[in-house]
Length: 57
Image (cartoon, rainbow, N blue to C red; front, side, top):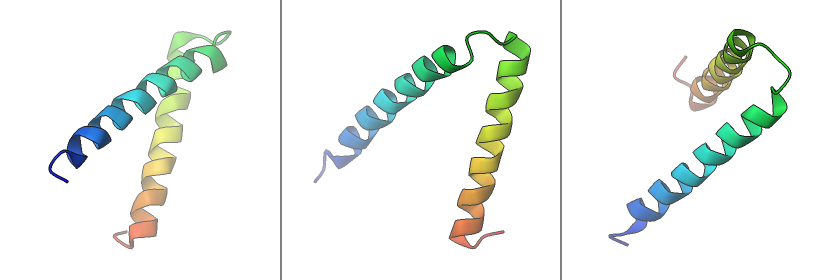
């Protein structure tokens, strides 16, 4: 169990790469500034949901 952090780190890197890949594919025909704004709004909403779910709002 001492190496559990390594598994989580590798999974995190893998999914971060998938997010970047699918983000480029999904926002291919959109201006870069608009795409960045859309991603930022989605991330902010997700983080607010996590905070609300944890009861720390």
